[in-house]
Image (cartoon, rainbow, N blue to C red; front, side, top):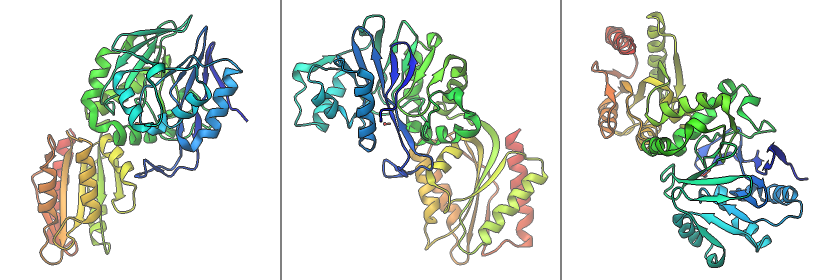
Length: 402
Ligand code: FEO
């Protein structure tokens, strides 16, 4: 059965939820599914804004045909060529030989790479920055926004209603489940974590590209933001998500607080991490969370690391190398360009304990992070003589939070 939602007169939601997916891009663990959004203008001309992933093909195609109600599809606008949005381009174009594809030159290059068997030459409308497409009452203007987060990405702005189509930007993990608008849910409580995990792992590395896009988009006129994943943002909530994007894209912590991350083989390093958490709590630190690096999804930890100002890492040496989950964590946050964070580092080891030294070396390959100066390497288990040093480290954290 088709599942259609009217966004406003002349604009339908024709995307679909994927409740089965557990690994986005086969690498990011997601717990609440994802939506693949697609929108259809029903004006003098009809225009589909992007397609959807292969896992929702059946629902998506039913929705498109149901919304068209027998009309021809005049245009397909493609904002982004990653297959979670373009997989069904071939299905749509095969069903609608009248449809013209509207996008920038780079998208057509990628279309030919992904669909080598298809001939787009007679059905291409190549647009450049600032070009527009009239559908009748609606006029769509195009903005090239490369590297948010692929090079061909563009956004478009419908001028009569103030609708901004933002490709992956402003997207969120999690299915919609009928809650088409961010205002339908308590976003801060229910979806902000998924939104942060989504942004930081998908777009996080390209903060400067997001900032460049912000400078050229008509954000002061926008009445609605329509991303390719997650809920639609109405005017009243737009300042909220813009504020989050402003912070995330400039690597500014949302909170002055401490994320304590530990890896522990036999419980001794965990004991030190929890001891440290209690020291901080006694000194009045309120926003404090402890996570096991080996048991928390790495994409969630990347998101949390963008959220907090301070990160304390407690980890044992492993065969003279970084502990595996610590190695992965540091690789991931550095790959996503995390900067402006303050680190506390505590190593452990029974023989040849080199974890702290290796953490310092790896962190130093990134830019703009601070490692607090007091050093502690535990020999096997936390001892009384370690406690004054740990206390001094806690004082350093408290000072850095002021
Ligand atoms: Fe949702 Fe970059 O694709």
